Length: 96
Image 1: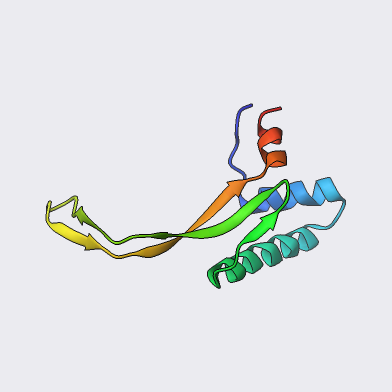
Image 2: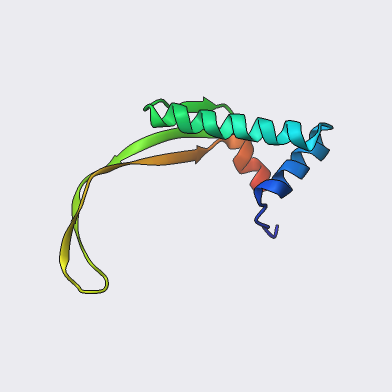
């Protein structure tokens, strides 16, 4: 399978065609889903959608690094990284 990067407008058209809805309805669904995931995961919640995947976060510890331009040693602050782990149905769809 050759992958193609779909932009938001192409994905809206895909959803509208697949589910027999308007592009406005499809865009609203995408916007509701993405903003809700961002809000929930941003609050530290995990979201598990069986078959699709799990949205969660992981803590990344502070560490030392180097400025690539100057070679100067710098300290990289700790931060929280969002994660997505694909579910089995999604994995199967990619390998069928």
